[in-house]
Image 1: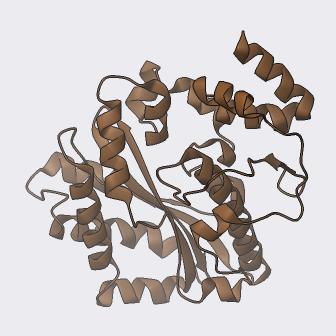
Image 2: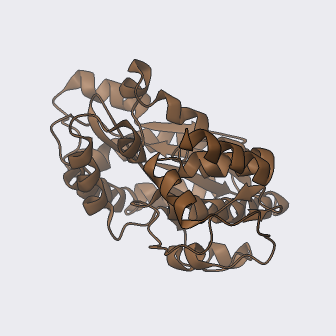
Length: 305
């Protein structure tokens, strides 16, 4: 099917699992709709005269650390960050009206790298964030066991890179920070998964399904187990209602029938076997978006060859 409103193709008639973490097919559908929600939230914020700021939180990690351990400590650090007088004072001074948080996990030469990108909607000045947040985040990460205060070099690097604040953010800036599944507009990054630069920077775990390097299967299973039950996108309480965004679960989005889409064509069971056998599900959707059903048929012919 093709949706003109979202300018994207999607599969229909398939069993859906609704997992934004484990399933690239469901992730493509879910993230496409979440993108529209984020755009709606940002449009509301700007109409209200709020400043839109993107805040990225990261922390040091080692290749030997397990993903579940890092996620647990990250969650603990965020709980510590968002309580106490220093946090309340900073929030009040900045006039924080609400936020949208995105959890992202990549894997590179230094192992698992969980981090978050947050859109903050402010009615006050964002200047207080750059001066206050790094210290608050350092204190939280140290208490959670993510940073050793005795390591002066590490602390210095953390103060420079642990928090990144970007003002006057447009929706494209935020979406480009999300994971690199095809529906978020970064499909060209898939080709970089096996490159030296790609390995150093880190790749989204869905790359493991394509790269199939030594250890990728075990890493993917570790990733799926650790992310079970986690929310990729979190809106602060009441924000969706204020922005007139409907509350829908990932499972509901994955199964949602789209009234604005139409059928491009029907794949036979043999066609689908060819697509799956060549790991070409994403490529087929790209072809459908770029050239319609004619492009899909050309790709199928090429895959059979």
